[in-house]
Amino acid sequence: MTRISPCSSTSPARKTELTLVAVFAFAGSQQTPRDLGRLRPREKSTALFTASDVCRGTIHRARSCPTAQFGICYSAKHMASHVKLSGLGLCALYLSLVLFLGGVAVQAQEAAVAPPSAVSKPVTDADFIAAADEVLGQMSQITGLKLVTPLKKSLRSREEIRAYVIKQMNEDKNAAERYADERSAEAFGLLPKGFDLDSFMVNVLTEQVEGLYDPKTREFYIADWSPLADQRMVMAHELTHALEDQHFQIEAWAKAARPNEDAELARDSVLEGSAMAAMIDYLMLGTGRSLKDVPDFDPGVLIGDLGSTATLQKAPPFLKDALMFPYLGGLTFSAAVMKNTGWFALPGLFEKPPVSTQQILHPALYRSGKTPRSVTLPPLEKMLGDNWSKLDENIMGEFGWKEVLKQFLDNDRAKSLAAAWDGDRYMVFEQKGTKRLLLATRLYLDSEELAARFFGQYSEALEKKYSERTNLLRRPNFFSFDTPDGGVFLDCLGDECVTLEGATRNMFDGFTKTLNWPLAPPPRERPGAAPAKTAAISAPAAPLVAGIFPPAAQTAP
Image (tube, rainbow, N blue to C red; front, top):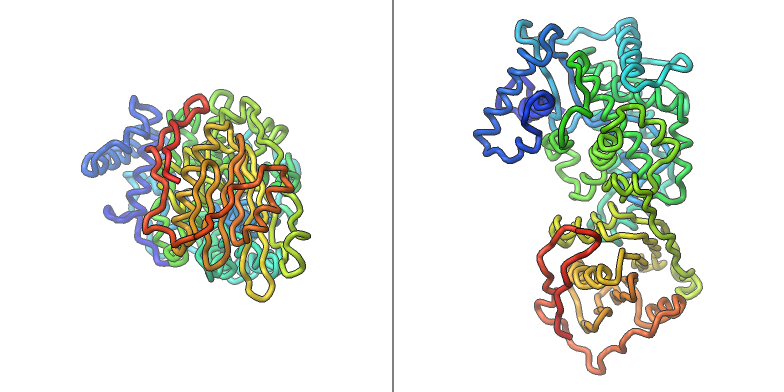
């Protein structure tokens, strides 16, 4: 990808650079990064350039600001497993691939030094080994993790890294498994029909690869085409993974959460979030400060213009969120956990890992030990018959449900509703021949009141999901309608709700009977077409306070 020069005062990279420098500068001021978000554009521009001057003249003083390229570090496993979102991508390989998205960069330049030459000096093996050893020692100092055994390190060409990544993806899951992931995402409305998730993953994983750490071989690879100064930030992140691997065996540790993919995503967020935190502390070496000294740190300033890469420009919003969550969500979680004790808290995260993405999103719930309920679904294979094939069964978690709700409701309502999550399970089936999908879900909420609110707003989401609807039936706690792809049913009882999409009424009755639920209200004798506007009118979103939502809006039967 052709990158806009960070030295350009109008480039997204330059603005991102100065924003991050501003965050670090605020560590020694009375302002916080949150203040930056309240500024008007002209005020923000002034604040950013002033912060850059602070970096050059104040924070680093005797030690020059390091020239560094900053990027979000994706992994073949994570890029795929996080896109999977509890069953929607690849989920075995733990590689950290550094991709520079949308010119996301930090270059804090020393004022007295001339701009670097446009032609980068080729990196030799000796240069690379020396730099990697230096950064490895610094990351050991930052994290408190000692190097146990020597680490293999090597330079790789773009073609070698691309071939390696594709090989690992194919070994992780076969074509049938990747097809099931793609169809599961489609069933939830997270991807449009016909979206080629497999090709997307190959493209995004290899579009701008900069480096990787492979725990299977315990080897660190880095791109041979990048300037050495840029590689140091890559090294800071990847070598943190290497140190963690020597102490905690990260691949086996992450896989220990299986088959619960929400819990696995939570562990992935610990790995990526802690490496992000270490990378930021590396950037702040010599200042006498670290991430824990930055008040109310907002990792959103690290995103940059994600839509500027060719692949992500075409990606559904869900994919961008899924790719970023373990890095930014994990960074926020790591910063919260390590706020008081710093890196001394790291071993505890591996000894007692978070059990759900809910704990990542709400670190206080990790500290309090809140765990979700264990949810089961009845076996539907016998009821459906031999004409249906089971594609997937797993757990979405709070992050997964938030993404589902965001497809059809505004972000604030989606976030508020998902926060009431207390456990779930889903199944996806495909009808042979027709390729029709059937989605069954069971979801527990924190209270009956929250389940009633979920019913009101998720019925609205379902109507937006299916534009063609007939025979709509709305009763207290029960909602259904027909579509060209089958019936859609939503039923809530107490503090739990179930859905069945792509089914018949007989299938739904059989489904709830196995749960020992009362029979749902019978359909109308004379069904008619759905009115032009049938969505439930919901009260404005309000944040969760002590587990209570405002009352759900009522709709006419």
